[in-house]
Image (cartoon, rainbow, N blue to C red):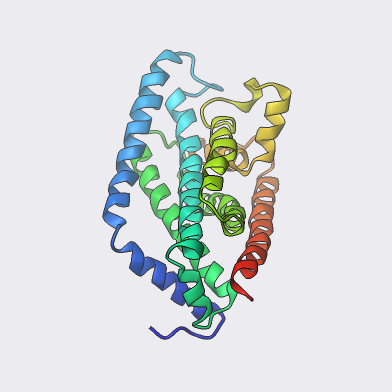
Length: 259
């Protein structure tokens, strides 16, 4: 394939490369996209939820849990695609160096890969939403709004993680990222219980994380209620993470690719 010199067509060509590569592995991810939501909702929503007889914030525990799981799934898929695949493009497969020699610009390379991450997030979250609908956990037509929301949530964490993965030189630093950032964010961002039950310090740490803002928006959409914070405020905050992460990623990619 002949790479376009630059611009949107070049980014689309990079996206095409990632989609072509994904054709070899899509079956395994497609199965997990349905099996994992099913097991999670049965285990947490029905298993743990059987002991939460009073519900949470006036709704059944399953209904409370599902939007949080949709948002956290978007985060996990985005981070998964923005860590080892990115480091591999620099350290092992070195596909980024082939692309920059094509020649392509850093924004084209980054834009095509970020677009692929958005595709993966959207596909996985759509599967989760379908399973949730089968369980009767969606109570508003606004639940469809979670689809564009999960893309925003995914990119809000993927872009800064792209920068981090491009900056480090060893995958041991990726394990540190999961241990000290991704896992705590997932546990304490309102996915499994309201953040109001946390101590004040942890509560504000949850508010700073992009995941809590995504969880609040998704929960409002699936339940058909108003979010705790302003919708505009949530969206602007997530967009700020996307833009800031993109700028950092461009700098980190240029540091590695442009001599």
